[in-house]
Amino acid sequence: MNTLEAIFNRRSVRKFTQEAIGNEALHTILRAGMSGPSAINSRPWRFLVVKDPATLQKMADGNGSTAEPLRQAVLGILVLGDLERAIERAPEFWVIDASIACQNMLLAATELGIGSVWLGTWPVKEKVEAQRRLFSLPETVVPHSILAFGYPEASQKQLPSKGGYEEDRVRFEKW
Ligand SMILES: Cc1cc2nc3c(=O)[nH]c(=O)nc-3n(C[C@H](O)[C@H](O)[C@H](O)COP(=O)(O)O)c2cc1C
Image (cartoon, rainbow, N blue to C red):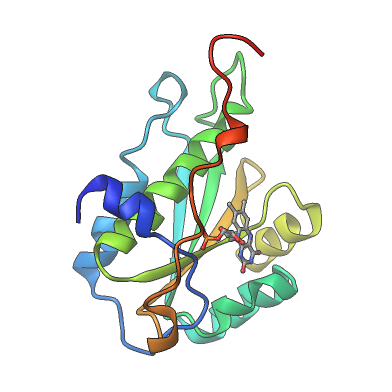
């Protein structure tokens, strides 16, 4: 699968088999996360990898009803921002950097045949605080998103493309 195929074929997968994800695939996904661009190369991300089903349930509890896919997932990665690495002039760039890491991980999973869905956490205060409490995070480490992974259930393997190009979202040269 080339880059464009991964970008165009990726869909959110919300139903997973219980087949485990091997350490090599996990390492590739994490490396993809750490390979994105970041403001002044600050790399302000941290990753909390969770395979324990009981912990995945607790993460789902804290992230509200839209985090249901995590209950069936075999792997969850809590993507975090490390404020100690955020750049002084514009600390909020950490949010963008963490978002790019998320998308890179979803694309890597797509290439590996692993299904995934992004579960938003930041900037919803209750969700951020729930994950912070669950893992007793230091103040300088901020929950950003949870990514749920697993091999797709049969029904999720051929999700239709959503159509892609929207002509009216693009303007050329002038607004
Ligand atoms: C910031 C963000 C937060 C999201 N949060 C959730 C979520 O809580 N639950 C969920 O099932 N999907 C969530 N999604 C996935 C979107 O619903 C999904 O990407 C969108 O519907 C487009 O579908 P696609 O990913 O198949 O292209 C989130 C995606 C993003 C980028």
